[in-house]
Length: 233
Image 1 (cartoon, rainbow, N blue to C red):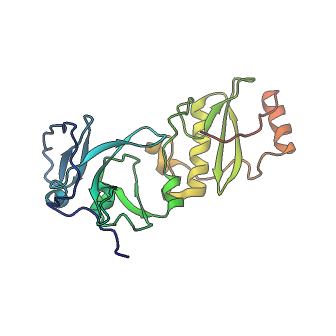
Image 2 (image 1 turned 90 degrees about the vertical axis):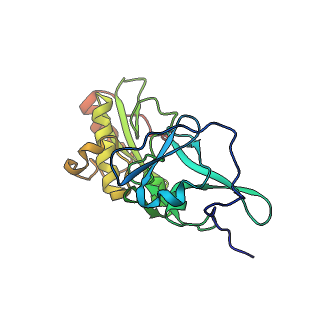
């Protein structure tokens, strides 16, 4: 069986979009170029990749279940079917059939500069996901407990949920999550305050998962019992 290949420069098999492309003005930085996409979006790439990238018909696609966009195209394979291929994979020459993932370090799916891309496994790629579009607290790993009005924080690692604690504000709870994310996920962690990454001490306040002991601890601190941790959105 022949191996799937990505779109080639000047390929006649790339499917054209009927949506208008965004007109872009190139930046003054000679090392950075912009690629106009559909839906009013544009992608950022290195100028060294501009020649091969700009010959492909790229479109903007919304990230599933999350805020943000990524750049991709549809092209025809030998079987006659059209498949999707991301610009981030095209830049790193990773074919559609390759099981490896390409992760955007800063979480911006339109920033396809090589310094922002890294090859990842499906698991490490998931660690760097932004908060879900269904999140109502405004911070990843944080939700508000209706009964007490306090903000709870927890993190899920390998299918196991670790309850991190509760705080009076969402910001304080978000910082609990950030420290735990760096502790478990390292450089692949998506944190709520990336500007504080270098000053955060990785760790978790209590290595135990939800237990009766934790309940008693938070009874003394806040006068109410913590809710059972549920699956975060």
